[in-house]
Length: 227
Image (cartoon, rainbow, N blue to C red; front, side):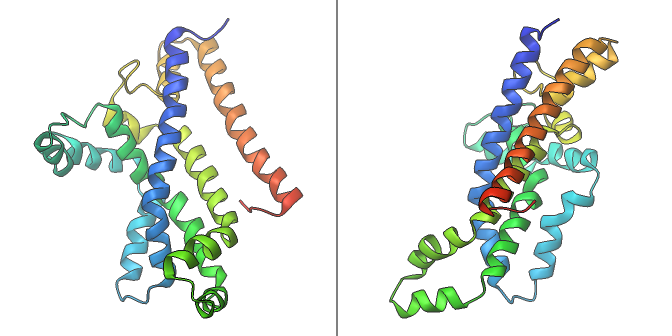
C-alpha cells in the first residue's frame, strides 16, 4: 500500500505551504519582533497580546474570521479584487495568509526573546565603531540571535505542517489546490480508509520528529538553539 496521487499532491502542497509561510513570517516577524524587543510604547502589551492570540484562540474561530476577511466582501478580499488578484478565500494564497496569522507567535516570540537577550552593550560597541543602525542589525544582531532565528524557522514550519481548522475554514477541501495533509487524513478517516490515514499520519509524524531531532542535535553539538 502506497500513497495515491492525491496524497502525494497533498504532501507536497503542505511542504510548499509551510516553506512559503515561514519566509513570509520572517519578513513580517523580524521587524515586528525587533520593535517589540526595543520599544517602550504604552501599547506594547496590546500588540504582544494580538500577536499571541492564535495560541489561545480556537483555530476554527480564527479561520472563520479570516474567511470573512478574505472573502469577496472582506478587507483583504476587496483589496485583492481591486488589484485584479481574484478571490483569496479557497485559494492557496489565502492559505498562506491564514497560516501566517496562525503561526505568527511561533516566529515572533522566539525572535523577540533572542533580540531582548542581546542587551544594549553589543549595539553600543558597534555604534562607537561608527556602524550604522542597519549595519549593526545585520552584522551584530543577526549573528548573535541565530538561535532565535533557527527556533523561529523550525517552530513556524512544524506548526504550519499540522494545521487543520484554519486551513479547512479558509481553503475548504479542494484536491491539488487547498487540500493539505491534515485534511487528507481527515478524509481518509471519514471514509474508513484507515490504512491511508495511518500512512499519511506516520509520514507527518516522522517529518515533524526529524525536524525537532535535527534541532536538538545541533543544539547539543554547537549550542545553537533551544526549543
